[in-house]
Amino acid sequence: MTKTPLFFLSCSLLLLFIGFEVACSSNQAHCQNFDFSPLAVYRWKTSSGILPAERAWLDSLNISRMYLRFFDLDRTAEAGGAEPVAPLSLPLQNLPDNLDVVPVVFITNRCLQNLPKGKTEELTEKLYRKIKAMSSRLPKGCQISEWQMDCDWTRETRGTYFQLLQQIKERLKKDGISLSATIRLHQIKYPQITGIPPVDHGMLMFYNMSDVRQPHTRNSILDLTAARPYLDGLETYPLPLDIALPIFHWIVVRREGKVVQLLSGLDESALQDSSRFQKLAENKAQLYRVQRSTYLNAYYLYAGDSLRVESVQPDSLQKALEELCRLLPQQTRFTSLYQLDSSAINHFDHEKIRQLFQKTAH
Image 1: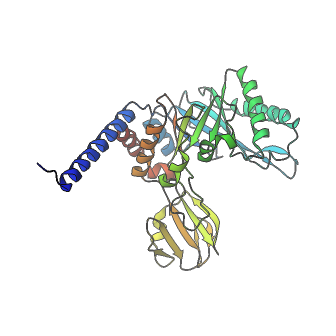
Image 2: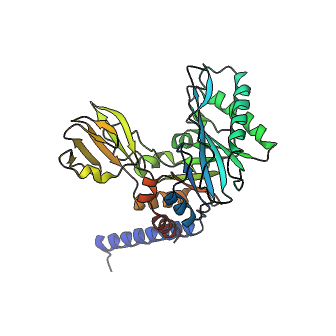
Image 3: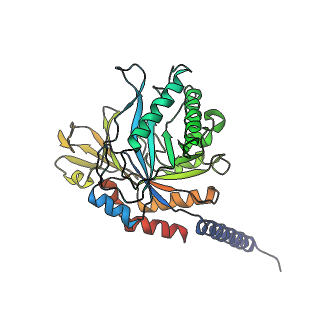
């Protein structure tokens, strides 16, 4: 019997469907074996207390580790060099018992620029003493097994930053403490340019994926389309990686074509006041125009300002997890949520978080 073109088309479609089913089954099987636990959380605020609702959220998710921002390292006009600034207020109240705390230091590039080689040892000593002193003021039940340095280093600051990391790592070995560093997507994509930091492991910051300053950006926080071109090197990246996922949201304020402010922790229902804000029809972006000058969360907006709401939805976060479990090697790793504050946990309560990980693992 002569086979018609329709027969061949049907066979091709069947093979394509079977291939798709096999790929999906393989992906699901990989996710089922993927260990997303234990759960951790970042806390970036400088205030000295965990609110009752935040504590209840931590307890309900059995979060065992907190990446706690201790201070920033920045260049100050007064000191004329790199100095700790904006430290966390201590003692920190209402922490869970037996919490594993990871002190985090955010390091600006400008404090590393033009830093003489001999100054890195002095900076290492300053960092070491400051973190040790602050750690001693944590509740007695807290344990510290790791420190983390957070810096989006450049080609110009790479040498100084890596030297600083190496010195801190050697210092911590004597204390039995490991050192990690945050890793951005562009550093995964171009390791031959950015280099591999000399640390024990990395924290993949899986958010802030596109340029928040660009007017055509729809959601700079989590955009898998923008992220995928940067994931080619994820499977072969030489450092073991933990994962940091976003649960925060913000409003991007643009004025005269430029971003002038990021408003965090807002109740977006305030934007429903049509006497002050006009919702604009825009595909896949939440845009508003300020109708008359007004305050929003103590920030003054001018008539004509444009507002873009950027948030993370559970389905988007689930797709991100599925993408990561497809690419990352199977190993036990910390999955950390960024960050702990009232607005974030109101948007992502403990049931949403629990369901998210259950769906991805099944």
